Figure: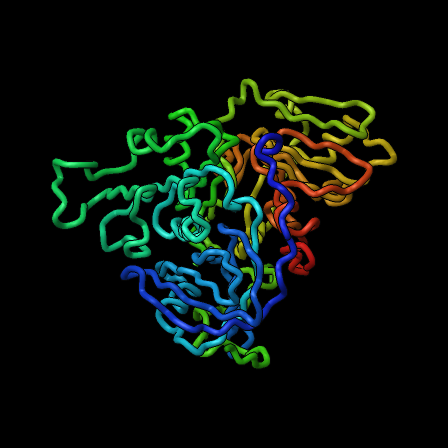
Length: 247
Length: 209
């Protein structure tokens, strides 16, 4: 992780806390929602970085959590985050159920200089659940800059209703693996059988020199990295972001 | 066009969890993870064989020293009872960690007078930098046993550095050694936007805090 894949230095100082205005909300799935935030000014970031959102109660109690940016780094002062509502999620439930357009949220960032894709190297993106959020920023960035050819994207999802970013996770470089239930109208005898990721899902997507970005729950991250390493991807070519149940 | 207004004093509609009086063991901005122990790691989880595992103290020391797993276990043991704090805002309170004090390891290797900082390094290549005074004086351990069980691999087993008074990314998982230096230089997360020291009580989370 140090020598060959050492990251280049990143603009590493996050902006201080600023007030962002929620300008739009959009459901992604029954348990996840995208918030479009207007920042006071455009903040440069890299695809894969995250923001910290801080909520303050009337008695001064605060809670802060990190959320990956889902939108592409396009120089705009508006960015999108996608929030999965966790059971008992103190912050995620508020962001999914209570926040409305017009509300103000304190945010800072961008954070993280490791799980980032700069848009000019081949990469394999593997994600599940809310782990697709930073990968979506990378894919949107690639499409925006006309470099989708650099990416291969593999998304694991239980059932069609759980798939984020309706329609966007389709196309020549993306593969969606359904683990429990396939979309209606798809002949189960044709194409990929429903089930967990296997090496057969991974192997066609491998290219020498590509960096793998794996994002999801700790269990998914370990499963996916094991598959990649089993298929011959060196450990130092794999970057992992594990999303924990931090509410 | 966005209208910029002064920072709201609170967030509309947010009350937070119903909560007991705040535990004084929690630094600002942290919450008690209770029985949860989240896993946040930037690299594949390595499977390390304790038969070949080593721990090394090198750099500005009189006697660069390497211990095997068995050699480390015959050193005088040391226990930390207390709390840990992750920069992602969870804390775990009242843990019991067992291992060997970094003081014991440094006493064998003997830091040279010019040593001011250490770079902890892991078997995975992970690194993190610390001022020498933050790993001496009973403040740091190499630990392999937590709350009555061997340290699980996802939490850095077979052994990790334990520096519980700083944010937990300083407590390098799968630790392989300490390199003593006469200057500070950023480790892995410190190159990637995180603070060089990481004191949770003053919320030194990111570069510039």
